[in-house]
Image 1: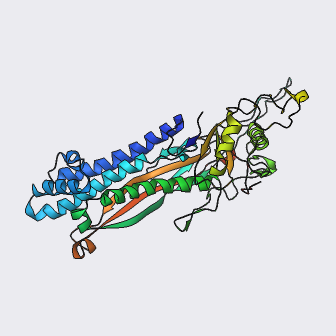
Image 2 (image 1 turned 60 degrees about the vertical axis):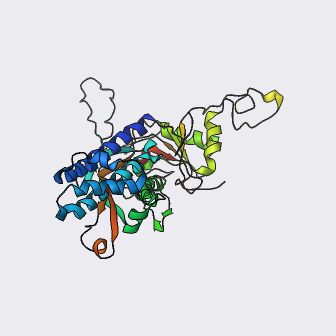
Image 3 (image 1 turned 45 degrees about the vertical axis):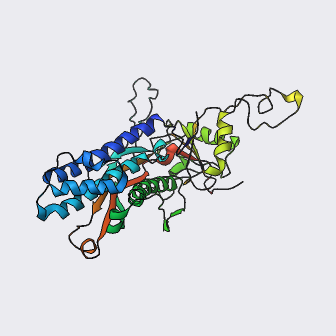
Length: 389
């Protein structure tokens, strides 16, 4: 399988399912609000007005024409609201068009309250031999109890009215497009940094680590008793590291020490190692043979032997995965992205504040969501210290 990287168009079934959740949440919520706004102003064909060809100038003229159909006292207010609706539409289009890779690794869900609770139960015990006259043994089970509180994210951006009036270069369209792009890119950086427990920053702000697990990865077990080992000895990705991580996944235990099913489907790596990872996972013959002697041909690990990890997992990469980071992931199981409010654009009242006194249109982008581990045992970290060797 071709490696998954932003912009190359490769998508897994999980990515497509997550996109449907995102688009449904985004489009249904914002279009319903905009439609209600325009219909309250007596504009039935608002989509036709807002999709006029010719860029920002034609859009502005269309908004003025629609607003002029209303009472004169409402015209300027209606124009401002239509302007906001147009920016929101363009924001939505760009936001949804930005390709990200984190959707290949996480499960996206909708949220309808301040916080969501996750309490998956682990497997119960297994049958045991019962001798004649003995009581049947009772079994037990444990579970995970996590709470994800939605956080709010946003920013303000200002457009001068003259730019709307005189724009012939597409600056307005590009600025509103940048709001959509940056909102989506922020999600990508946030999720990958948290998955890898990294220390990266974006635009001067430190990206947060996991709140549900203080130490999400451990080579001695994230649970008491040495259960839940989900980290190999830290080293840069290699065939040895991949095989060691795969073995850890197959030997994974829950909080009770019982075997649990972990099947890594993704190998996530940083840009430094994407081509090496593709060679490791895609070569027909052993990509890291230990001998070139003719007499050793065909022996395990030597020249002409098979590649034991070929197609073991799809390769995914992102510029926001910390340098030299590498991880095997059972996609869609251990990490959740919950979306409370979709990304939206809110315009400041055009009849007050800077919009009135300085003729500056200000827009606020906002969203509420959270993303974190529910159970990190589905993620096997191959390089916890981001070693370059």
